[in-house]
Image (cartoon, rainbow, N blue to C red; front, side):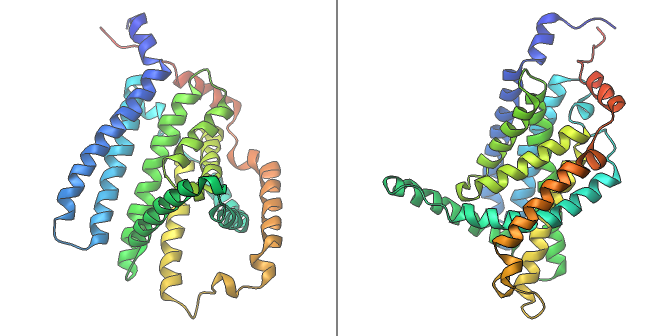
Length: 312
């Protein structure tokens, strides 16, 4: 074993080069997906099936592969660099489920508030364009969620829930946040920067804040647990519930209560305040118990981030 060349070592540890590799390969593969999309759209099948195939292709090529490439460039043990190797704890998964339930009313209120925001009158043209993009994205989303039967729902969960959730976490948390946390940037700033880029890249201004908070939560889950599987599970859970609830509310009018039919106490600002208080208390009293990494595990993680020497 020999020490790596100092020049090569500096290149592999350069934040700028790592970001260039991550986003450079992202755009190259995204361009390839666009070309492939033209061929897919002309193939037999429904529009939803075409969208699902395109979404799967983008997840694998535009999100997973760039994260792997930057990890392999940065460290020979790319699996460890992306924090795929760390076995998650069951209690972390249970904590995410509990938190999802208690924070849902507050998040629903924030989503509604953000969607109703308006820009100043002088920026009405910009707002009109933003809302047009929003409606276009919403139309595509609704088409992806348009399930007919449980087999269709299962396919949606696999693609929109599992594949999309995992691939985005690999890219934004394992790749992008991983680059930031290994730079001179403060770890808290790294989490929020990755979350902001995560929200911006969805190109939905009127859903920016809820997605920003969700991205930050995913980022802190990785920071606390040192396992990509924990934020991936949270992301998959959220996406999968959206797929399933969209099917149920669209097909079970008698058995599913519409939001506007619920008592005011359950769907108003009161429930949002209670939800927010419970969420804050959860983080104060249960965060360390459910998500905290021990000092020994933290030291092992820090050692694993050192560049691996290669034989010459």
